[in-house]
View 1 (cartoon, rainbow, N blue to C red):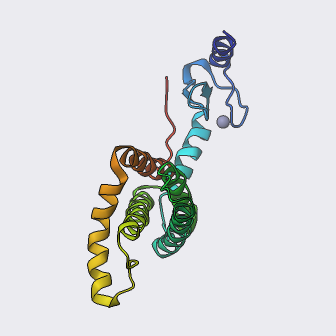
View 2 (cartoon, rainbow, N blue to C red; view 1 turned 60 degrees about the vertical axis):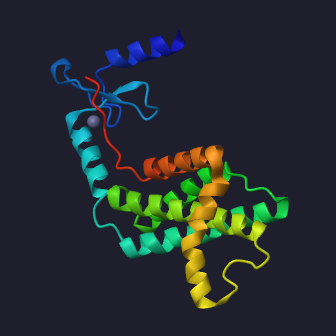
View 3 (cartoon, rainbow, N blue to C red; view 1 turned 90 degrees about the vertical axis):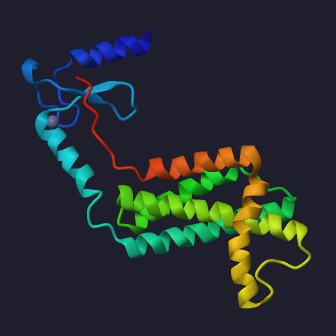
Length: 199
Ligand SMILES: [Zn+2]
């Protein structure tokens, strides 16, 4: 009930929620609010500024630093997840959602507080690789007497190829489901922001 009153109240206001300027009824445009529910009034001038900011946030992406920050976050979160698994003898798959979130934030920060498809691609790939290799190494070491990457370069390269198979078998349905949520989180966090016009 309160929600409804608030919405109607907001809809009737012809005041830009950004600069508080009054907008003539004919020029009034409502956009989706920050909470994704309550519509807010934004004047054309402010709307254009916001759109430009969102556009700028996808330009001049620092790919090198995006990768550097992202890979660092991958290693740290992957290792923490792995250590928890070793200490508790359980791979807590729900952790991957946090892992995807942290990696995506790191990629975005490294890129220069950027978003958009380039950052998204790197964040999703790194999240996927982290899940596959952390899970794969844990599953491998659980069944093999010899720890992974301990038998020379050639054997290590072969293990790099085999580990994803260990991961897939070990993840199972629930693990795969959490992994997909993690990939979606990485996608959503780095997605280009958009101003959604309601009417
Ligand atoms: Zn305004």
